Length: 298
Image (cartoon, rainbow, N blue to C red; front, side):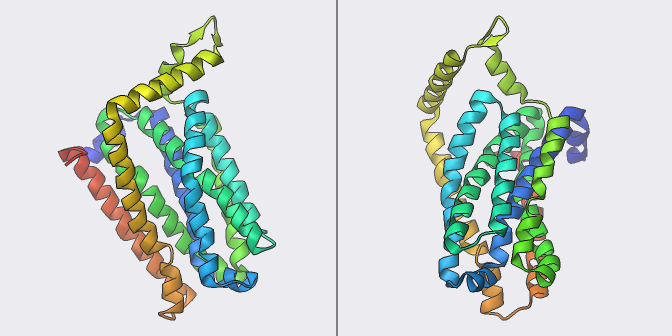
């Protein structure tokens, strides 16, 4: 089987890198989706409406591009690995602060900052993973990597069904700090992106990185890339905008719909969430496999 062959072709470092990036994205999504399961009880505790509490989701998503730009820029300058560790610690801290939000205003602040971290994780993790994998394995593993998002939803549904009935919504966000432990694994097992190391090696002289040259080269390279591929760049942005609009437009308030409009219990909502996630995971892996066989564009 092709998938098994590709997995066996990876060396130890490549497997560790992919696993770390997959878990980073999974746990990032897990932290995000926890909020979508408990909008109603949170709105009740903060004395606000469900619609107003929904702004906590909106502000998180709005800040993702900010985080993607900041951490993406820093990742190009200083390396994917170290910035990924910083990002995971940052969004885990924001998740913990969410658990202890004293008011609705503070909740919005913490979720906005969490959005910055969430935006940074995908770019750093995907870059590190894809730059570390052999070219013939990227199609399949890109599909698997993306499904970390739905694995996060699956874990969120599972933890919601177990933790929320016993300890309430704040305990969910305490559990959401567990991704910080992933940093230990990255620190010990994951090497820096070989692509980034090759790029930075061109500006190393006498065992010292010339920071001014690094910055100039970065902006020059970025400008050249945009000049050559500006149409593709715009297309990818519009494509991902459409995908995210469909995704978040349907799933983020789905659990609220199941509880408020359909009157389902916590356990029933949890089971439906798990089934929903499993279907998405299977679809993502299938499409990734097909892209490996027929090409990304087709």
